[in-house]
Length: 124
Image (cartoon, rainbow, N blue to C red; front, top):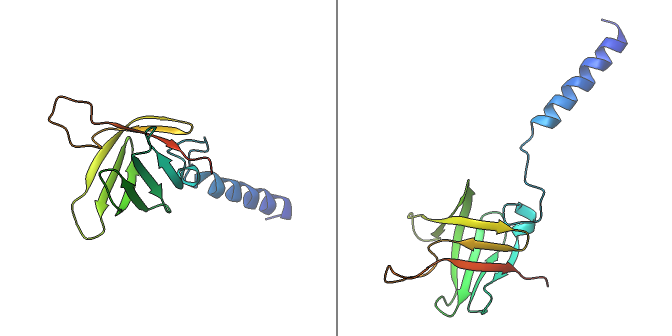
């Protein structure tokens, strides 16, 4: 094989391997791993979600003193579980636009009220 053909094959394989890597959402929104890390706060500042890294989250607020969770995102759902529990709970991601996310089933209700929570990314 001549060197030009070897070089062409090498470049083609390199490009193929690079392009097969997982494509992450690059938009500045809740689905972007890097952008998600940090503090997300409800408008009334009574509930916060602090994404520590790609799998750890702390919830604090009026109803939650300090709860540590493991989390994962699968499609349109945020799944969380307490560190000491095997039970996992899903919260539908209803909207995720730039610095805002609305998650379904975030609060206890009597079944008649809207129990979704809207959080905004803290800019600090």
